[in-house]
Length: 434
Image (cartoon, rainbow, N blue to C red; front, side):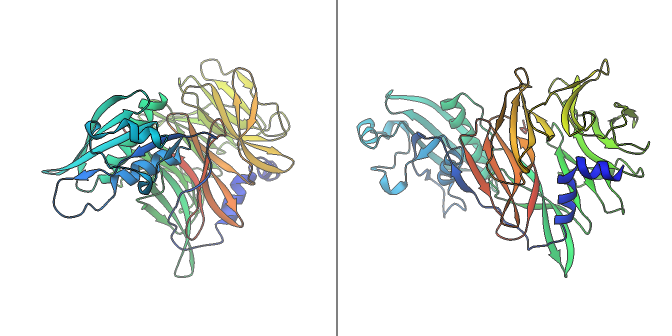
């Protein structure tokens, strides 16, 4: 059993072993490494401010940074702008055409009783028309939220894809406190800003997963001396221990309706997939096989689970239809495919794929079986897909340091989020919050 588990879960073992090296608290920074060949030129004119004093955040800079990070846009530097329009009426189409700019964003921020109101226009320069006027408001500490929501609106208007700049992530950070190993579950904006510590542990923590409503995370903690699954409310801090079985308690994943958690338990001797009904507290065993079944993930319709199993001799990904119990093998390309994640439209499978001993992130079209390797780094693991299905976050190594990175599902856009100190790993991309 132990030998088989070590074969099937090298990434899990590496995560636990890596936690022996500690670093200081990490701050994530964006390092764009690859974008499309011909990004769309766009200008985000500095937004005017009609209140008193100086705003604590440069909202137009945050909007431009979001669009640049998508890899699809090339924001015009402020120093190259010929004017700073505050509304569509102030936009000179000829001046912006000279710069080759396709779109201009012009906006103004006003104070409100409890915060701020941003009104902004999106102008199509070559079409010589205003595409929309939008308003976004927020509290006194929500300027970054206002900026991300504006970027979401602009991104969707131009690309037709809903923006995900307003989403967040949780991840695991290694640290050292008083010379002792320390582990933290962290939360931040998806660009790495506004990091906050959800909870700190003296034992490893892993496998965080968001609930579908974005209010809770489930994760595995070793704080009791053995792996146990917890759920924690991110707003109130209330948490509940869900499992306390001997053996393996791992890989919690929420059902699409948030009423159940699939997980891996070895309480009956062999790692199997179980589903916990969160209302009744009842555990239902879903797989029965002498091989190791692990790493479940729900299909978007909630009718089946994909999971990793070595029942074919080596780790591959299978699909379990819950109504019938039928199990079908999905992956055949390569000798190792694990950690499956399904895109929001249910069409694409994302996984950790091993080729010639190198662990990379790959996708597979579920209908055709066509596989595509997305990353060129090594020891890539823990993929997590954005709710719009356009990008995914994963953990990788830079030197001997654990960092987070992102890649588009067509592999055209890549960026990394290295920490200034310490190791970070196990990212989980949030759902939309509305």
